[in-house]
Amino acid sequence: MGTEGKLFGRFNELILLLAGFLLTSVCGALIAAWLQGRAWNHQHLTSVCESEVRAGLEAYQTLSDVMDTRLFRTRRLVWKLEETKTADGVRLERSEYRVALDEWNVHLNRNRTMVKRYFGGDSEAAWELIAAEFAGIQSTLSALLREREGSTDRPKKKGAPSGDGVHELEDALDKLNPEIYYLDDRMLQMIQNQEVGQCSASLAESPSGIVRQAPRPQTEGAKGESQRTCEVTITGPTEGATVGATGKVEGRATIPSHAHLWVASHRRGLADWWPQGGAEAPIADDGSWEVTVYYGQARDTGARFEVAAVVVGDADNEQLKKWVAEAPAKGYPGRAFPNVYEGCPIRKLTVQKTSHD
Image (cartoon, rainbow, N blue to C red; front, side, top):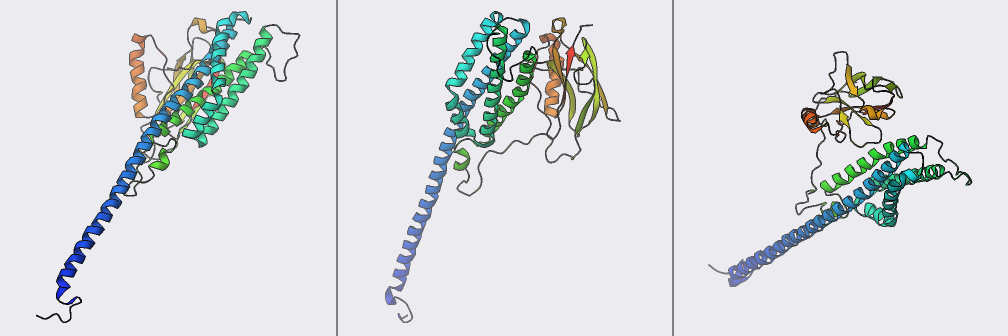
């Protein structure tokens, strides 16, 4: 067969073979290099993300400790001020408070930078709000201590507390406590979801272009549940009512399936809560519910108690039932406030214990 019609004449087959070999080798090498580069880049970004998560966790621990320490030391000082009418009677608690205050102030800019660097956005705004509320509490506390020291020769600052300054401080601390809790919870969720620092941007894409961030845990009561309205009210007692050793708390509720209504109480100023009624609150067909609440011990007479009606999911319901079963043998220890079922409100009121009858 002749060479007519062939592009390269009698060398046509050889040249085509060489061209195919070159194309296969070169293209294969280029594709392999491209894939290897993307794999290396992803590995590098994953390493960066892991480093950011570790650093974010350390930042969280530092920030959480400094907030909780200042909150606790402030509470201790306020509790002592409630017991004694002189500044000398709070010497130890005042000294501990000053240590916590100094720790806060010395590292204020560092901590503010860590919030911005690793958590940013809403967390940064929440931190600034908490810092501002701490500053307001400090101003009120300083004025109250001057008042207890009997410094009548000094003019009172505008807004200085009256004799009820201790209650004013307790109210401010009770308001601040859940704000600190929610910031703690938000920062932990960001760490869990790998959304700290540069981590979120680093793992925005995998080699296949698929988002590789950790999935957000779905809260109980989210999609897949019948969208039943969640409403809770407390109809009695009324806000500020006086109570004895025990009392009936009642209200009305409409809650989703797989949700459970509990009532808990604690003395104002304490972080822990005590579930009441020995079980979840039974809701009647007409939506009414009723639980007997115990208001501490005889020594708590004169104190204010906070009562909360809270809706929880199946998992938290099991934890609360376990607490009820084990609490008698353990001396009824307090526990953290339960996680709230998504979309359901928390209803609270404060009462005054005037007797232990």
